[in-house]
Length: 239
Image: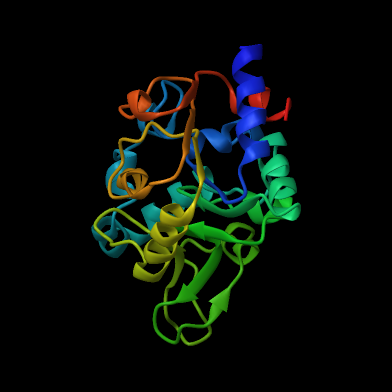
């Protein structure tokens, strides 16, 4: 493990255009549950499967039930950034890290100080009226007792998160691809790399060093210059 950490440090030292691509595992050490592990949301029992609840169709047809689950399980405003978020913000501040691309919707990268963050699946911090497009913050959604949050105009307020059956934001996707194509180092961490189209982004990397950090193996391990199968907090605390 020590050899791998030293190799990671050396690669970072020699790189000038680092891009970080992260998944749910980045935030689990802040206390936010992931989706697919044995303790994740997909393995907990609800009246409906989480995959169904977090779909566009369910949101449209069962809005009250959607918000009951959403407010109960996806409220990230009570959580704080962990050492991984903090170290990434530090790497950006010194000019090494050029962008964070995240599958998470919790806003913890920005809370830690990262400025250039591309949120592939949106953010719980942004919410908009579906009728007049007025903005509402996360506190309005999570800290009120409305069964369905509504705007002054009467429209339903929808979180700016990408639900199943919805496409990714094209501009965010293009910017993410562009960053990865120009990177000399790509760190992929806390993701199983099984969710498309997000996982396909790794195929755009043409740089020198691909580093994969995840507790479990991924389908892309054989392509990496360095694979570390351990907790992110343990790895980043040593940088």
